[in-house]
Image (cartoon, rainbow, N blue to C red; front, side, top):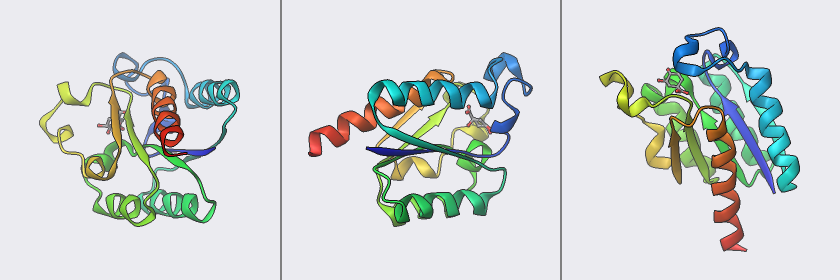
Length: 147
Ligand code: DQA
């Protein structure tokens, strides 16, 4: 199985940005932790991070051309604004889990809207960086059932 982990705007600033909300672990820590989990589960994983909306659309399309089995995505603030990212997930039809490090449901009103959610098989929020591994486990369960 092959998964792509896509992180959007400002997630490269983890560890620096608002540590009371997002924790002290860095983006490099995130990558290391998810890589370790993937190794344990014997699945392939690759990572993309960009602050640019179009790059995230490209990464979703690339997952299709690379025949990825699942996408784990935290679009950052583009969650709340981007129809283009929603359309990309719909276009590729790859099982996708939406992840948020923070408890978005308990934050500002503008964070209550998620365009991408309707195209996702699951949403994980408020579990910190571990949420990415939970998303991977969910996809593995889902894909295992289909085999
Ligand atoms: C976030 C929540 C978003 O509202 C915010 O814009 C982010 C990070 C999260 O992981 O909790 O950049 O997606």
